[in-house]
Image 1 (cartoon, rainbow, N blue to C red):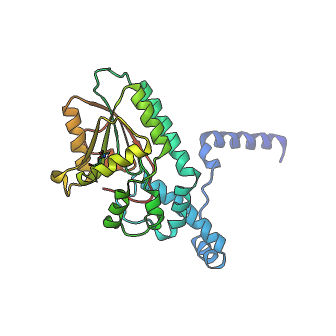
Image 2: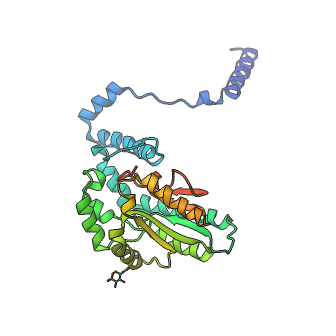
Image 3: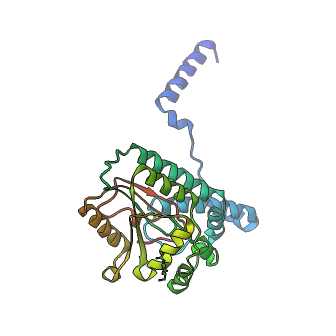
Amino acid sequence: MESGQYLVALLIFSFISTAYPHSVIQIRRENHNSVAYNRIYDGRRVRRDDDMYCESWKFSVETNDAGYWSQIPSRCEGYVKEYMTGDRYRSDLEVIADDSLAFAKTVEVAGNGKDAWVFDIDETLLSNLPYYAAHGFGSETFDENSFNDWVDLAEAPVLPASLRLYGELKQLGFKIFLLTGRTESQRNVTGKNLLYGGYSNWERLILRGSSDTGKPAIVYKSEKRKELEDEGYVIHGSSGDQWSDLLGFAEARRSFKLPNPMYYIA
Ligand SMILES: *[C@@H]1O[C@H](CO)[C@@H](O)[C@H](O)[C@H]1NC(C)=O
């Protein structure tokens, strides 16, 4: 190439890269036949495929893109176990608590006792990880009886990031409402477990009463939030591990979704 042609080529190239900056980034296409081939011959490759798949699956369930699901994919049991028992879950919860607190600090608390924050309980304030660890981390069909036996023990450990947030919110002057899908028959053990975990001085513990039986969680929780609003409370924030803790009507001004790749409640 002569220097004149070279310059023209260079100018054209610069123009193209400026006009189409994304064309520089190429999305690699998987050759699916070769993936299947590797799966048979290389166990490590299978593991890598599973990790990639399960990470994408988790993204989809956490964002609610996946919608309703009943059991974790069996190939993701190891992935979910690692996530739930490793540092990532704890780290995710710390970041969410920080973000929740950052928002809470922007709220001008009226001082009339009507500034509310709503917390879910299971996988939000308390962790049922010991139960789920003994039941395949969500890969087994949910068994209400054995889960209720676990609840009756009142030994669910606390999620430390949530305990920290809970204390800070009280300091800031929020009234704390606990809104759970647990039933009235579990009021005593639930209170006992919360106190044992270090939570105290909540404004109200709201459980499913007989008139709430059979209602989808999203309806039951919305109705209870609406009752709080009708009492004059302003629900600034809401924290829950399920979208049904947060969506529906009478939604909080800001909702904070905690991770839960083990189960889905509609
Ligand atoms: C549970 O019930 C027992 C016995 O009636 C009572 O002493 C205790 O204070 C209750 N605990 C809570 C947290 O309500």
